[in-house]
Structures are given as C-alpha cells and as structure tokens.
Image 1 (cartoon, rainbow, N blue to C red):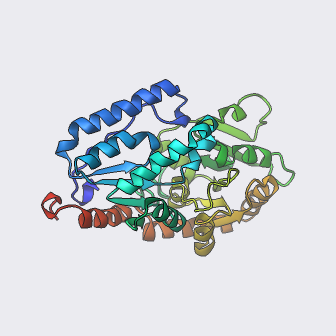
Image 2: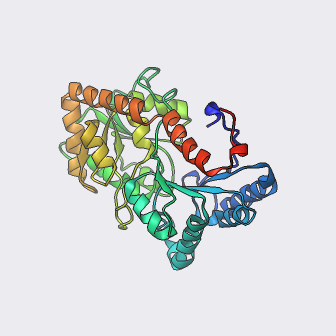
Length: 340
C-alpha cells in the first residue's frame, strides 16, 4: 500500500497468537495495548483497516462512533477460533455477536473466497463485501535464491501447528509403506499441537524446525519437492473455502503443492495445474502424492513452474494492494486520498 501512495501506520500485537506459545494473559494485555494505541491516534487517520478478531470490537466500535471508516479483513469463519480454543465454545453466542457487529459497522468487508463473501453478506446484512484473496511477496518468495544444504529430498509444511492443519496426518503419512524412503518431512512453525512433534517416536523422516524468519522459510520452500496445505475440516467450519497464505507463498517459490479437497484451494490447484489434490485426513493419499512427485521429478518441476506463473499473473501483493486500494478510494472522501 505504501508503494502505491498510501500513508500507513501499522499497529500490531507483539506477543503473537496461539502459535507463539505466549500466555493468555500476555495476549490479552497485548490486544488491549494495541487497541489503546489505535484509539489514541485515531484522529490522525482517514480510515482503519483491521484483521477481523472478536477481541478487536472495542477499537472498531470506537472508530465507527467517531465516523472513522473501518475496513474489516476476514480470512475464515468465527468457528475457526473454537477449534484452537475449545473452551471459548461456552461463549460462542457472544463471540459470534462480536464478529457480526463489527461486520455490520464496517464501511467495507474484505474476504478471501467467494464462499466467505456469501456468508459475510448474510451476517452483515449488507453487500459491502469484496473478495480479495491472499497473495505472496514475490520479492522474497520466488524460485531464485538460496536453498538449504544437506537435507536431501524433502516436502515442507509452513504454518501454525493447529488442529486443522493436519499435523497428525502428515506424521502418519511418513509411516505409510508407500512413503518414499529418501524423502523427509520438514515442518516449520509452532502452535498448540507442538506436543505431536516431541519425543523419539517420530523417526528420522520428520524434522521440526520451529519458527523461522521469512528469509529461511523462502529458502526451504524453494528447495522443497512439494509444499503441503492439507487443511482438515474436522469441525465443519471450512465449507466457505480456504485460501491459506502458505499456498500462495509455496507456489511463488516454485514448489509443487499438495492440498486437500476444500473449496477454493482445490479449484485453484486443479484448474491451474499447480499440484495434487487429495482427500482430507488421509495419510495413505498424502504418502501416495509424495510418492508420485518423488518418482516423477519432471512432473514436480512442471507443477512448480505453473504455480510461479499463476502467482506472478494473479496473486502478487502488488496486485492485491491495487484491488484493496480501489475499494478504499471509493469509500474514503476525495480530500483524504493519497496523491496519485
């Protein structure tokens, strides 16, 4: 957004979410602090762009009450949070109301799939909803550059260790008889399911690297035989589709992708031939997909090239910023707009 002329102040939490391992109290203090900073500076802003979160309701309501337009970005249903934090299910009515209320107040809502758009329009009671899917920073995530040494052939997963990311399925797949002996599984990230990756029972095929800086993530994706986005809909909360950031960054890096058959990602991968689609929660199918790519490196490279071409044509952050800018321009007063 800055590159195309917008003045942007980033107000973010510092302790991170569930993947950070920080305490609930630390995260609560962080949320309160970030919102307090926003409210103190609100008079300097023409608009506020928020990543939707039920706990952000005070700041959203404060801005709306002062006629500062709020733009909400939604990447999934509120039910996602109950998978990570089951205890919040007791407060589901309140949590859903906090999300719904923010959507109703919003000047505009951005979502990442068509399914989410239909849901958001129904929940918000208005049609001020646009689909702007995820993308990749192609200056960082691209096929050219360093790759990790000494790992041999591997497939990679990058993301939070959460219940719906299929960590247990990945581990089980490495134990299947059709998993290639020479292929390792490299997992980058942290989260509430980190306990699955500790102990001696994993064997030599699984390597958990924890959190890594973006430059290292890009190198691991660049060198991978394939990258995994095997999201699982165990709680029936993903019917509106998934457009995970990890999918776009993997394709931009030139890795073939293996994805589960959830709306949006299965259509993208199937239509543009960037990888292999498998059923959810199916270790033999995952092992078979890895085997197919390991046995046919030319296929893996072709799928990877297709992914790079797709992202460069349709899903760079520069393109996404332009799409968002068009909506902001339409909504904000002419005198508040950055010079063009």
